[in-house]
Length: 218
Image (tube, rainbow, N blue to C red):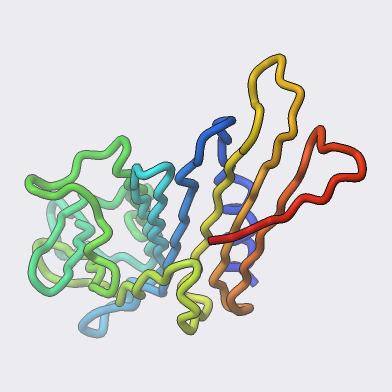
């Protein structure tokens, strides 16, 4: 299952740096994907993936679009533009890069390095909107952008949408010469095609022998 592979990659790639002695906001990863289908009886088709990543309160988005079957034989200087549309506003994210034959195109856009259209701060608003591939302002292929789901929402999730959330906190005597005790708490939630999974793990260090410790969640 391709999306299962994406999920595994996110788990590996989205590592969390833990700051000892203080709570960490953690990381949330939301990913949606869908097929891109031809418009007006054309031949263009492909797929796209949109990821929304929030790490310690800072959000960014990454978009990857792959399209094959492009036909620009009627244009003298063809440029295939990628447009995101939420029904109210549109964002032009630039042109597809095309192969030497002109029949295959791709775009990779990252809000951390790319320039967003004027007045825009992120791409999160286009969750549930439409992706358009246009030639001279005319749609040649479109896709419905699935809505993002939250990691702990329990909303029905299918292969078009997944979400992960995880974070950690270290409590106790974390000084360089500290004698303890110290506890690390890891918590996570995953909303995937396999269902909603949540978990918490508590690891103790330098605990007193024979003592009883209680974990309380509020």
